[in-house]
Length: 489
Image 1 (cartoon, one colour):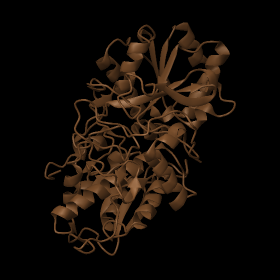
Image 2 (cartoon, one colour; image 1 turned 90 degrees about the horizontal axis):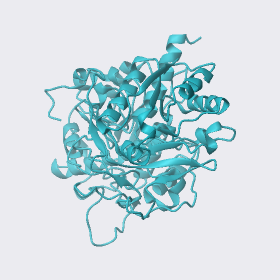
Image 3 (tube, helix red, strand yellow; image 1 turned 135 degrees about the horizontal axis):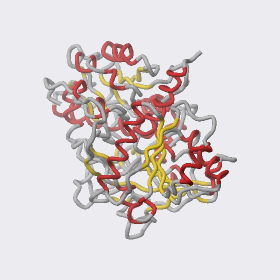
Image 4 (spheres, one colour; image 1 turned 90 degrees about the vertical axis):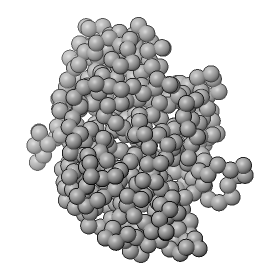
């Protein structure tokens, strides 16, 4: 029987997974509604460098594509099949470890969608020849939520690199990660320790001291009065409190938001959400953000409907862009609920080549796999790894070496994963400045902002804001154990 403490930790952990993803959306299948959407990937903001997803050419690519980028996979070149640096787990395949927590008995399948996407990616890439003739082999690095150290030990002994995954309690991977000279192209990072660590890179950076603000800037411009009475609800647990504190700090940095009322609830969930709904009504809260899981927010929504009060604005992070929020019978269906994302919407998949490529890849190479936002993040990270590996081979006599691959990845200043998401700068490890707002209309998710083709659409369906990322101040966790000053990257 799971103890109440562990249940609370499990809840907090699952909340953090979603919150750390930046652009997560959970789907059991790939919806392909015909909502109008752009046909090109997100361009750079006005002050950003040219995207480096694919070679610049005046001719249309003739080889395989992933969305808007030429596939980085293919057969061996004239140099032959690549070899590995001594002692770096090389062989007839390149073993890439995908971190996840699917084996935790308290919540089976946690982050399994990342492993599912990694397996599909390996099939897709290997069908083209792998990494210059070297097949990819995915190794399941199951941290089982509370067993990260042995999973990290497995990584050190078996894989060349970690790619496309993440552990909920990722601070537990240190210092072993550095001791064995591992590198990671992470799908996401949760803790401040991992997000600020060296030896790793993310396609969508999530630094602890800088956060996306485009969505809050939109709220400020659209609802200037409503944002003056703010409530943040979060599970009463150290890690979820840190997330809520970072959100409050982001609001403060943006300005115009009232001092948030910080309301805690049982991290295992509440048997009765009516007192929370009543307090929102009594306090006259007009802007609500919820830190937690979509299942608990659905219950709060039902309570708010029962007391006859829903704040004017309910705008939440990307994990709430989920099918549960619009499932039949859920109270949120017609409330105009809002969530941010920086991924191509599933509802607009027909018109986003990157999303179409992801869905086709899953259908072809892992048809039983889960389709979800975490899978998109895994895919983007794996595409980045192979791109960096190719550059390393070009510059290192056809030899794969960890620091060489990471160094090439660190040169990528603009990335969209072939149009899977809005533009990021992995090299600078800065928070993204572009995104869009999704909302519930008539029981379905639909784009709210920016309207495609409007002045607010900077191209590709995203709104990019020069002030779309802000530095925040506060104590959000220790970062020192994730940094090894002896490493070059």
